[in-house]
Length: 167
Ligand code: PNS
Image (cartoon, rainbow, N blue to C red; front, side):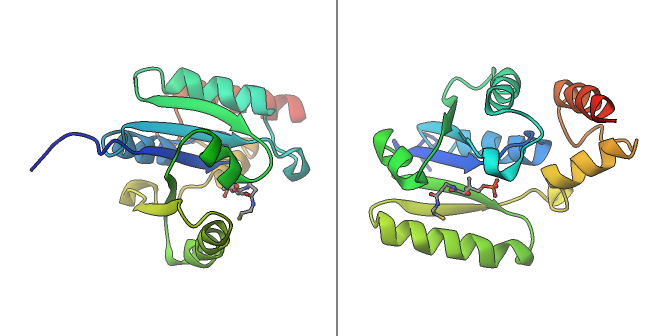
């Protein structure tokens, strides 16, 4: 069995507000499948993110330093246009539970309609993180709970500072 990545560039899009260990697990596995993986962070001020896009990019870059074929970028507008501009043939998404499926299917089919040459590829989240979401992590930290092991230490520290400030 060949053990080399397949020469394909993949884009892994999301809000990453902030990046969690669930994301990192997926990135780690995908970095072994694809020649190059671009973690693409959405500029989504309308979603009122906790961290600015610059902060989200900076945290992701810091925790992904050890992956030479993984790049972190931000994007606005249509995902398929960003993917095409970077020569990516694959959009990568993670699926945690069956409840993710409907939303993911809608996005994948819309993206296929917009750009039939770009395939959406799904990886299953690791069992340990199948309950994990950035939204819940923020809620738990805001209420004083422990999220160690669910986000990198650097992200945990930034969350505590930000949410303490928010009062
Ligand atoms: O982490 P999220 O919030 O589930 O990620 C959602 C994301 C960024 C993948 C999605 O909102 C997106 O692709 N936005 C870009 C706008 C776009 O291309 N929309 C049309 C296709 S669904």
